[in-house]
Length: 220
Image 1 (cartoon, rainbow, N blue to C red):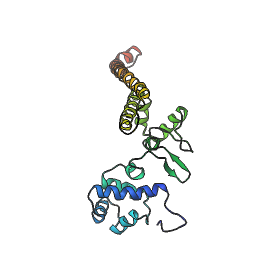
Image 2 (tube, rainbow, N blue to C red; image 1 turned 60 degrees about the vertical axis):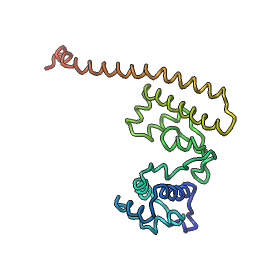
Image 3 (cartoon, rainbow, N blue to C red; image 1 turned 45 degrees about the horizontal axis):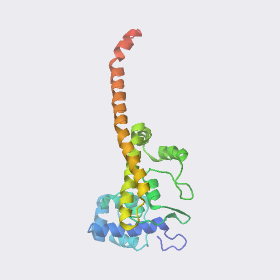
């Protein structure tokens, strides 16, 4: 319980408190209805418990968080992280990061150091290896996956710059550079797809030739 003054809510707990109320209301759910949904999922949080969470008087543990996210049909990150903003996001009392880096870190896209700064490429591989399922890690490390990642990052930057240009002076030169980078990534992507096709054809051929290799080596 957060009314224990020795262990008050931190910045993440406060965000969960606010996000829960915001998303519940956006879904048009009463506290009683949300409690019933959570109960149907096998996690008991009475309506009073929902009220206490939203008031900051009850902590949300990991099991509560997952059940609430399922009941609200959102990612757990939607409860843990800010929905919008440009200011520094406090992750702990002593560590803050930018909005984009916070979401990138939580989504498995970029490492953060212990001061909240984006990690370098040397840290990235180990970060992704330990943060992602093996199949996703392999996809991201594959040249085709890296090409898609560069394209995705570039498009995100262009979209954000376009939104910002409505509210402030646009940095035309920077936009033009990023636009060229995105176009280059688009041009490169078919080559990587062709390489995937060629690798698959080689694998099929290797499998089909396996009996011949076995006979040549004296096998059955």
